[in-house]
Amino acid sequence: MADNEQRRTPSRAPSTSDLLAGRYVLEERIAVGGMAAVWRAHDEVLARTVAVKILHDDLARQDTIKERFRREAIAAAKLVHPAIVSLFDTGLDGELVYLVIEYIQGDTLADLLEEGPMEVGEVARIGVRIAQALGHAHQRGIVHRDVKPANVLIGIDGGVKVTDFGIAKAADDPTLTATGRVMGTAAYVAPEQLRGEAVDGAADLYSLGLLLYEALTGQQAFAGKDPIAVAEARLSASALRPRDLRADVPRDLDLLVSELTQPDRAQRLDDPVAVVERLRPFAAVHGAPAPLPAPVTEPEDTSISSEMRWLIPVGALLLLAGALVAVGIFGGVIEQDSVASLFAEEVTPTPVAEDPEPNGDNDGSEDDAIESVPLTGLTAFDPQGDRGERDRFLANLTDGAPNTIWATERYNTADFGNLKTGVGFYGDLGGARTVQAVTLAVPTGGFDMEIRVAGRPSDDLDAWPVVATVTDVEEGDAIRIDLEDQPQARYLMVWVTGNLQPFEGQFRAEIGEVRVQALAS
Image 1 (cartoon, rainbow, N blue to C red):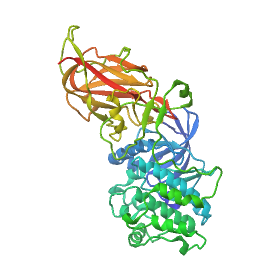
Image 2 (tube, rainbow, N blue to C red):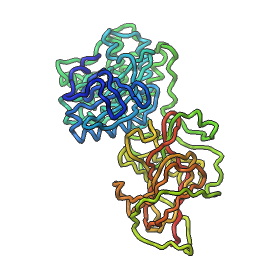
Image 3 (tube, rainbow, N blue to C red):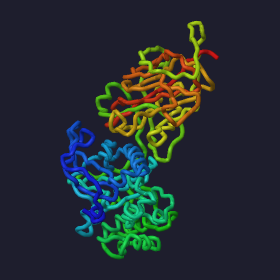
């Protein structure tokens, strides 16, 4: 294990055989880093081995760090890629703040580098997988910020996975300069990161260049008596050339490392796909060759037919919103199905009415005329997450085509991976209206939801009174939810509360169309 992973021990730590969150039995502490200790554990619910990362006690007492840790976990949970360690769960157990991630049996790249330089083909093979993982994350607005050998895992089967996505950003706080990762990993961060400037994916690729250099030459690119000296060397250094120390490094690979380690961000190669293409000719075959990355875009969902559902182990959540946040996932979802006309037939579930707090009253007599009211200005509502939820697909909810859908992000469990209590979207009715019903096109039913209303938008969920609760939403072209108390409100929210449905190994909810029925004005 690398030295920088052993220097710091938590001021408080759980013990072997402790039960965390009522399900994770801690078996062995396997690593200690600047922010957290990592334990191998057994998940008693799903009967599998997992890794549990527990935030150090002194950091867990800082509300700012805990909140950043949680938000970055939410972002990291959205990354689903064969070269990225999966995040399964996160939460609190007493004062312990923890993440549950995929357990990889094997070594870190840092462990392997202690044995000296690696074969050129193996270096390139590992580099391909790291670049694929980074490209996948960058496409979704997530910058790792801490790419280093200790964060690259090599499984006993030769598989390569990048870990600690999202956690580095939580540590990137001025108060952590002395003890956290910002200084602790000065050997690998980009010059702009050392200067405290805003960073993007190019910073991760700079770190990848340093990692490739070290793997090829057997020594770190920059050394010094302390992290400050290492940082100063970085800021004044030129691009690196591995062939200066190892003559058998191919010239094109040497040039690639040089282009990745340009100190000037504007001069640096910043395209992960191009990095993969240039590394691949040198990559050794280790088992099955690593596939070329599909362009780093999420594949479109193409079918929701019932005969294909058995192939889909997990997935689903619905609700949506308006403005895309910098850290978020956006992937194509144009669902095609034999869904007929949206409002050809109406089915009325029996919602469980909550105590409403309508903004006005109306007797809603049967003699009053009912009209369909457009819901405009659709906005995602994700107050416990990254403030966005596949925002670019919100327009599908009101386009009149039930076979174009909005879906929630994909989560690792049906209850949002324990990351949040819900997610949704809201829209404007154009003025205060007496709402009679909400009608949804639901391609895949089964999730739970609420209808909420407000006189004006608010970031506080409690400011949106619940006017209907529906469990196990039916599947259909026109699922009508009658609002018994007929609240008067200008803004209406659809809030998904859980029981997300399986979709391609994860969970999500889907909605194809939303209409609101109100008394005629």
